[in-house]
Each structure stands twice: as structure tokens, then as C-alpha cells.
Image (cartoon, rainbow, N blue to C red; front, side, top):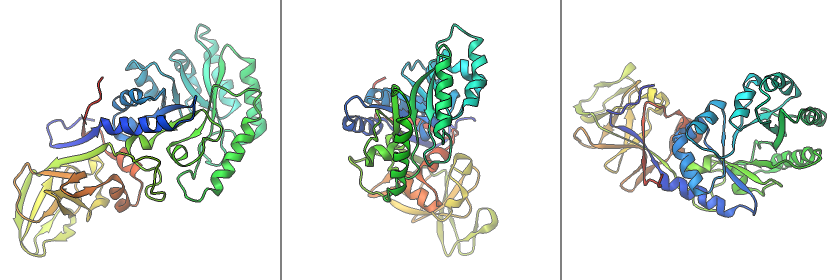
Amino acid sequence: MTIGNFRPATVLIDETAILHNVQHEVARLKKKTQLFAVVKADAYGHGMLRVARVAKAAGASGFCVALLDEALDLRDANFVEPILVLGIVPSQYAAMAAAQTISLPISSVEWLEQALPVLEAQPELPPLRIHLALDTGMGRIGFTEDQALLDALKFIQEHPKQFTVEGIFTHFATADDPDDAYFKQQVAKFNHMVDLLPTRPRYVHVSNSATSLWHAACNGNMIRYGVAIYGLNPSGDAIPTTPFPLEPALSLESELTYCKQVHAGDGISYGVTYRAKGDEFIGTVPIGYADGWLRRLQGFHVLVDGHACEIVGRICMDQFMIRLPKAYPAGTKVVLIGQSGDQEITLLDVAKYSDTIHYEIACNLTPRLKRQSINLIGK
């Protein structure tokens, strides 16, 4: 996708906020517990390589991603730290991961059986680093039965030149919920299954951002620190307090490209879903649903000169219109996410209006929007 470098629309990433959010969590960790920064999905829309660099400077000792491709991009950028892919990778790519010392999760003996000939074909490679995924209640990936886990472990032990168990993990479905009953059920199942192993692997990890912020480490020695890196409360506002203030790293700014006066009854945008109620000033902003500013945000607001200005009419693919309190010249700053005067719009505000979560809003901001770092941390 082409980046709009010559358009006044920018996602700003505050590197000092990322540094703050990681450093403060590293400082809270128990002795010999490591923090892996979760930088999947282009670091939740913040820029994977940028965030990885700052997180490393803040004390992250490894990285988690969703795709093998993302892990390879980190290796290509000369990150030598441990990298764990969190999603299941097709077994035919096992040798590619082993060659780059990239760790993969498994959920079945069948995957191991399929990967074995791929690895045997390249005997010069080191053993593939395996993390045993346990499904303790998320219902996504992982072993659910004791015997299936033991069968996989036996297979790995029988093929030490091809596989080595580096970690074991699970993922909690309700760690961001004030009601922790289901969370405790998952903890109990995880601890039971870990106890089946003759020895604990190098990494035992269950803690995402929510678990790390609000729960004990559950006998683990590594956390997968994700959304909190970016200054976002994992619960939205269901659990409003965090052990330290999280600093949002992302803002989204644009400019008016056009301003005009309309009169009572004049229609705005496709379908003419908005008609002026009187003499009004309408401004055009050069961002649309192709940038991730979706049509459902009609009726929401942005900030101009400290004023909340309603989005009127349907949001177009590349532009949307707002009702202004007065005439403003083209080039006037428009804040979609961030602060203007004493007003602020957060990712959570946008998410609530959209009936979704702030993770999704951040990830939906497309690569067409240029990213720019502010308050840079030394490279």
C-alpha cells in the first residue's frame, strides 16, 4: 500500500511513552523474570521495528509476534534476541524457523510428525525451539488433554536433533475482567499440566499485559507484554487503575484541506444523511475509511482549535467532513486522536463510539497513514 507522504495526515508515535511503559513494568518484575515485547500486527499499528528498538532499550529481552514473516523481519533488521511466534506456523516452514533460531508453538503430535522430515532434510540446522501451547480455557490453540501433551513430549525427546522444548505457555481469556473465577480455573489447569513435565523448560509464561498488571505471575518466569506497551489499559476501563500510569503512545493528526459555508437544507456527503440546520461552516479532512477511520464514526467528533467538532455526513473512502464553530483556513490542525487545548480524544473514546476495543482501532489504522516518531529514543 502506498504511504501518503504528501498528505497532511500523520500517526505520531511517542517513543518516550513506549520507553516509560516498558521500563516501569520491567522494574516490577520478580527476580529472573523476563519481559518479551509483543510487537505483532506492526506493533498494534505503532511500527514494529520502532517499538522493538525502544522496548529493547527499556529492558525487553525478547519479542513475540503472530507470524513467521514478522519474526523474519525482526531478524532482517538485526534483532538477535529470542523471538517467539504465537500462532501456528505450517510445518513445512519448520527449517526456516530453526535456521533463524525462531521459536514456534505446537499444539499436536501431528505437527511434529509433519515437521520431522523437513528438519531431517537439513541436519546442519540446530534443533527447532518448541513452546508447548496449552489450551486451558481460551479455546484457540493448545493441548487440552494430558495424554496428548505427554505424547508430544515423548516425540520431542525421541528426536533431540530436530526439536528441543524451550517453553510452555497458555493464554488467559478473562485476565482483564474484575471477576477472576474463570481465570483461577485456567491457572489451576495450567499448573496441573506443567507438573506433568519431568523438568521445567527455560520459559514458563502465561502473563499477557492484563495478567502482569493485575495478577500474580502464576509460577512463570517470562511475561508477554503487549497492549500496555502502547499505553493502553488492557481492560478498557473495566479495571480503571493500573500499578503505574500508562502513557498512550499514539496520536493521529491531520489538517483542514477545505472550509466552506453552507446554508439550511444543504446536504453533506453520500446519501445526504446530514443536512445543515442553518448557516454552518463545514471543513473537509483528508482521511477516510481506507485509512481505518471507518464509516461508523459518523456523528463522532474531532478536535479543532480546542473545540469538539462533529463528523457530519457519511465518512468517505479518503475524506470526511466536520461542522466547525467558525471559518478556519485550510491548513488548520485537526486532532483525531490526542489533545487539543484542554480537550482530548483517546483510542478508547473512538473504540467506545465504534462499539469495539481500542486494540482494534489502533490496528485498523492502515499503512497509508504515514507514521512519525516524536521524542525519539537514541538509536
